[in-house]
Image (cartoon, rainbow, N blue to C red; front, side):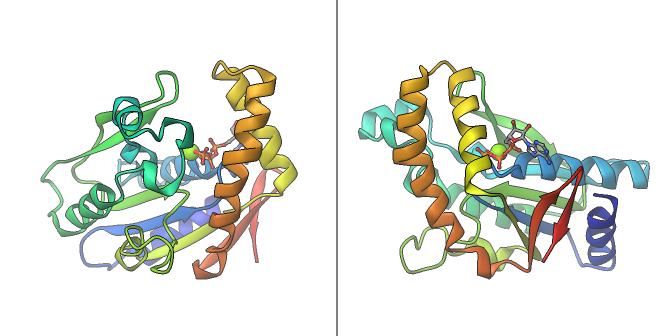
Length: 218
Ligand SMILES: Nc1ncnc2c1ncn2[C@@H]1O[C@H](COP(=O)(O)OP(=O)(O)OP(=O)(O)O)[C@@H](O)[C@H]1O
Ligand SMILES: [Mg+2]
């Protein structure tokens, strides 16, 4: 982790304006955990808040919006996010001078809703943005295609299918689903999203895998 954070630090130094690192990967791969780890490592080493996490999950449509559109059962698929809003706010982060606040929405896993202004970027010069669909290209999902060119570096966090399934099942059950409903959600929705995300792996600058307590890269 320290080595990965040092790599980000090196690349961000001398970079004009904010440095944007993107971490993509299938659902349950550990993207949010890795992003928080990199942020904490960077801030600890600097002795100041130089980095923060900008989750793609903050751009989940609200449950009310999805219900109205009849897509609540497909929550998590590419068109159940406000991709245009995500792209626009990434651009704002890039274009806004340090010291001028920019609010970024987060996602609350307890209430299953986005939270406006969950994190505020001010003097943080490094943005770690993470989510499933950062590397989608123009072919099937044009709304997501502008993300990749806005990022200064992209990582893909890989994880074995078996591990992903276990983690997602556990999470859905903890979130209130019956084991039966959790299995259905994983089989019909999560794994389909995972397959789509896997097709974007080759677009990343670096592919990472968990190894023991840390990560190794290919
Ligand atoms: N390096 C790791 N070692 C052990 N467990 C991990 C590791 N990284 C993540 N996990 C566990 O895996 C689960 C999923 O992690 P996390 O929420 O970071 O994944 P994610 O890729 O952000 O998922 P999603 O796409 O659904 O947001 C969590 O329970 C987390 O504790
Ligand atoms: Mg996450």
